[in-house]
Image (cartoon, rainbow, N blue to C red):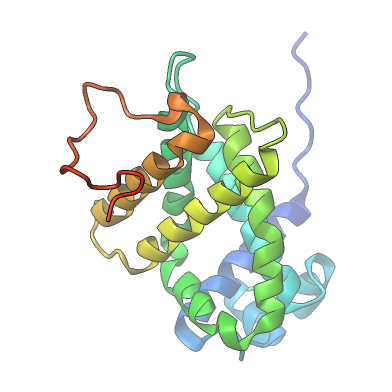
Length: 216
């Protein structure tokens, strides 16, 4: 007898609809000036329904980050058991950018306004470790041991560096974003381990002295 599926919580669907509408609208009107009424109208819902899901614009921003995490995990194919950790890490980070792509203008606008909106900055800063955790979990990468905090901080820095490039990368193939991600992973190999190195057959030759320890 087939096991019955757990019922889908309709509130999750409504919450995601509202969060997506808010970030889309931010691309048109900016983030700081958005009212909950504006967001409800854009989402095609009522303030009463919005209030059932969120109590503030900051909660909506956190809800958007959670929505992207779920969509990233749903869309990510973990690959074969033999896939290298480097490839899985690369793929899941690019999967997250793929899920962010429909909201690029809103994400850009929010990022530009963060220096003038400390409360939203706190929300983003608090959500980032959660997103990094889900990226690593989705890619089947265990980060444990005494260096765990350092590795997580390094991976957070990696993601932020690539994010800054992605925000301005308008090429359809995201070539700049992918090249930056490749370079950032290369820089973390000494910390993360040789399993994150490129295959010898695909590694790009470096110019003499480029990136060498103690160079210059």
